Length: 249
Image (cartoon, rainbow, N blue to C red; front, side, top):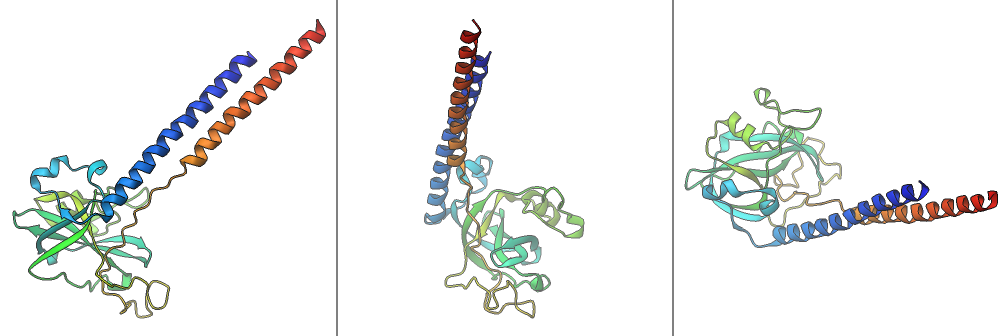
């Protein structure tokens, strides 16, 4: 019985350690793939014909480019926490030449700018940024409330419905930051005393956090260590039991 229990524990811990080896390899490949996408030159964003095939594994964080006209009267402010503090993401639909609409996250504004978000450029503009997949819900405690214009997640379908958009891409784009833009507020606390920080040209783009936790090495070492400890402890107990039996005989 001791031998069976020891073998079972060693097998389980070894299997878990090996699983973490595979998970670590997958995570490293994911990180490398995403970093390649983020730093690649912008390519054309997926058009309407490609929308059904867009997915997170193949497309998220691709550096894309698209041209169109902003629908400046259909902004949506989504609560956000960034390196610049708390505030809002400004999502504005961009209508392309074929009539499609893509939600563009133009960037971050602090709370004091909620009622006076700078309008987007008029006329045709070209936007570059990172393709992102929709967020849904808003979290366990905070749900989007479209009827109250309260948004906690960048839920493309829900925002499109609330703004009366009918040809919306199944993704949104985090716009790149403006060249040479400062991203630290002058007083260092995320917002000037007046509620506005003139050192920044709001909305501030380029704040996408591309970070994947990778603790698989510590996990696999832990599981393999437990496997070794189980084998040593089981062997010690079995040896002690056999010694006691010989003594009794």
